[in-house]
Amino acid sequence: MKIKVGVIFGGVTVEHEVSIISAVQAMNHLNKEKYDIYPIYVAKDRTWYTGKMLMDIDIYRDFETLKKYAKKVVLYNHNGAFRLQALNLFRTVVADLDIVLPVVHGNNMEDGTIQGYLEMVGVPYVGSNVLGSSLGQDKVIMKQVFQSLNLPVVDYTWFFDNEYFEEKEEILKKIKKIGYPVIVKPASLGSSVGITFVKDSEGIENAIEEAIKYDTKIVVEKAVENLVEVNCSVLGNYVNQQTSTLEEVMSTAEFLTYQDKYLSGGKGKLGSKGSKGMAGASRIIPARLDEKTTEKVKEIAKEAFKALNLSGVCRIDFLIDGKTKKMYINEPNTIPGSLSFYLWEKTDKSYEQLLDEMITLAIKQYKLRHQKTFSFDTNILSNFGGSKGVKGKLGKL
Ligand SMILES: Nc1ncnc2c1ncn2[C@@H]1O[C@H](COP(=O)(O)OP(=O)(O)O)[C@@H](O)[C@H]1O
Ligand SMILES: [Mg+2]
Image (cartoon, protein in one colour):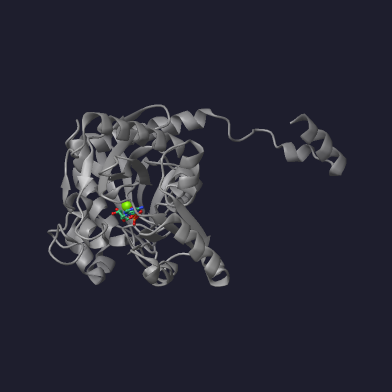
């Protein structure tokens, strides 16, 4: 019997379109002999749709056609089954899914939100859990975790938007101490949205105000000079990790912009036929690093993956000063663009194999987790008789 895989993508995120590209690529590379594929597209108005036509990139050019032919659905737990059900008059059952593959990018989805929903439904899913996904999205908290393990990150400072309005001078002083040039970023966005490179104190206020448009939490980082950007994909879980061949990402501006990342590969609009998603960005594989540096990047990538307790396929991005060779973890991408298949193809597996391994890992992990006790058969609350009872019982726990 085939495994029924629900592929979730889209969502209310600035990376909505990128997610469509990644998901369509993934669906077209899942082995049809092994898997029955159920696309689950979360539209910008939060409606969930399914239908085989959602595997074709062209359908997304015209939302009206999509709306007319795709089925509106919900995913919920129906007596232990992970039911994908149409919202039509007859509430037709589309499928009872075995597993879900989230191919989502950005906040409101990749950051633990969709994972939390899937946990509530109880369905096994591919990739990192809620905590790992959230940590991977917050550019401040992830640095704090890395620092606690002595993993290298750039000098930085951070603040909330209200603090900026109330104690602007203090904050500007802290930034000056880091030293220009700096990069200003919203703490939890992706795809370079809201990010500005600032050469000197002149541009700083505008840059912060730009970032504040997107997020309540802002991070200002020391800009790495003589920048070489290198990414390493990691596949595994807390027990085992494999690392991919490294890529060196080329940028056209001072840093890699949304334009560089997603638009340069395709003609015009995202989602157009020529658009290749992250696989289309200009890059050199393998990265032009000596063997020792390459190994070091891979080691740190594994450490970073474990530090955040990530699972499935992830991409850890590095910033390297080409002169001093100092390296810093920039950020993990817990669900990387194009699922990093183009790196694994250059390592040791086809996209199809990568997806197989990701699904196998997820099933194993689900089984392992369910061997741990996380609910009790007896209801301890039923024995509580007033405050004395509570005290007595808690004392024994
Ligand atoms: N500290 C830094 N020094 C130099 N360049 C940086 C720094 N941080 C980010 N960049 C550049 O900005 C790009 C986007 O930043 P990143 O933190 O990766 O944001 P996103 O989550 O949007 O991908 C990076 O790919 C890199 O080109
Ligand atoms: Mg990035």
